[in-house]
Image 1 (tube, rainbow, N blue to C red):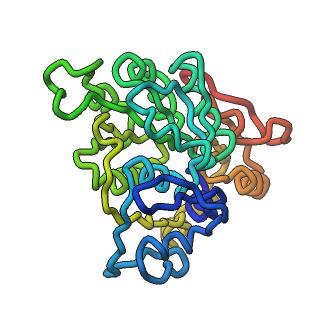
Image 2: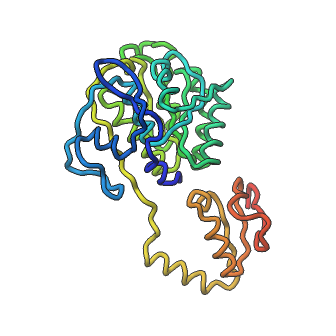
Length: 311
């Protein structure tokens, strides 16, 4: 799972300054707390807890600005793919917003790069391509990220609302295409809900540690809306129930020949060091399952090697 510090990260890039129907960027960095306070018209959350029952202040902005501000709030600063006409309005904002777009030679490689970037850095990244043929090239990388438990934001532009179902430009059933490859997917049905939907998709990806998809008809862009920026909900990792921990400890203490099998769960929980301590306490050999040789130090005396395809 991506560390919670990503959600708490400061708003280190230059925030959008909205007003008079023009789009510009401020010259002074603003912290997440200040942005949340400005967007909600109230005090920021205490100890990361969401504000319930507090009325938020709506701000007039374009849908592109709303989209980029939500990305900034979640600390998403890297995007991989190929920009097409359906995403050009928003991509113009990326440089000034501090979002790096990695222009790749093919969507397939872009998806694999996004997966590798997030897995190696612990920072959530975004995948973007042109609707239709560009998006179809994301299927294998997204499914790979799904089985790798990688939280990714999959942005799939779609044919315009008024042409969907009538052979719109490069129209493909993109939601059905990825239904088995993501943990959550949602389509934007109204410009005023673009922030709400994007925020929900990002949080689902983080909480489920898997790719999540937002499908955006191309006529959702360049719309001016009055919208309250979401503040998000931060969910801390659970330490586990006391009874469950006690039961696990009892089972381990009574085991005659304990063997530990490490895998993706150890990596996602940043638990390699804890696993080493447990293995040393039990004098238990440790095996790593397929594709996760990094789940235990290979030079450790208790490392027993990896398992293969079939165990």
